[in-house]
Amino acid sequence: MTPDHRHAFGHPEERAAATAGAKPLDRISVRDYVVEVEIGAFAQERGHLQHVRFNIVVEVLPAQTPLDDDVDRILSYDRLTEAVQIELHAERINLLETLAERVAQRILQERQAVRVFVRIEKIDRGPYDLGVEIVRARQGQMQAVTAPGPRPRVAFLADARSDLGALIAALGTDAPLILTVGAASLALPQTVDADARRRIELLSMEQNAWAVAGRDARCFVVSTRTELDWAAKNGQISVWAPSRMVTDAVPPPQGDALALAVWFAEGMGAVELVVIGAAAPQSRVPVRMLEG
Image (tube, rainbow, N blue to C red; front, side, top):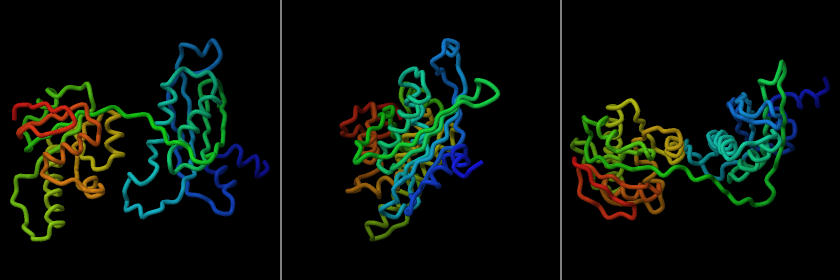
C-alpha cells in the first residue's frame, strides 16, 4: 500500500497531518461517534434505523490570548457532536454526501475553525463499512451561525434548602433548570480591599452552590457558559457557580446574590426568574415569586 493509500484509509487525523503544510494548525477531533438514525436513498432504508459512525477533525486557529484553562475560550468537542445532531434532526437525509457537507459547513461557522475533515460511515449494511469523507476549508470570513439553545428557567434560592426535591418538582420540567443561590450562612473574612471582598463574596455563593447540589444527585455545579449550554441541551439541572463568569464580564456586574441572579437570568435569555426567599427584584426577565 502506497503512502497515499495509507493516508486515504487511515483516520482523518492522518489525512490532516499529511496535508498540514509548513505551518500546521492545532487540531481537535471526535473519533468513532456512533448514532442511530434513519438515512438512505433506498426503499429498504426508509422506516428503519441504522448505525452511522462519524469521525471529525477540525483544524483551528491558535488562541490569541492565554486560555487560562477556560473552556469558553476554545472550540469545544461538544460543538462538533452538536453539529451532527442539528443536521440529523433538521430533516431526513438520503445521501451521506449531503450530511457530510452540511456538518462541515456548520462546523466552519465556528469562529476558530479553519479546515474540517468529516468521515461518515454506515456500519450495518453488510460485512464492510460504506462511507464518504470530505475536506472543506473556510472561504474568507464566514458568518457565525449557531442554533439557539433552549431558554432556561433560572431560580434564585436565598438559602440552601432541605426540601430541594420538592422545589425542583414545583418548578416544572418545561424548560431547562438553573439554580442560583445566595451566600453561605457563614461569617466571611473581613478585608478593606474591594476586589478581595468581592472574591470572598463570590466564593461564599459557590460554597452554597456545592451545598445545594449535594442535596440532590440530579444537580451539578457549573461555572462556564459552555457547560451551561450543554447542560440545558441535555436535561441536566445546573447550580451556577458565579465567580468565573462574573469576574470575566466587562464590566463585571455589581450587587448582591439576587442582583447577580437577575444579571445572569437576563444574560441567559431565561423564560423567567423564580425567586424563593427574597424580595421581588426589578428584571427584564419575567419574575415569579414562590413561598420560601
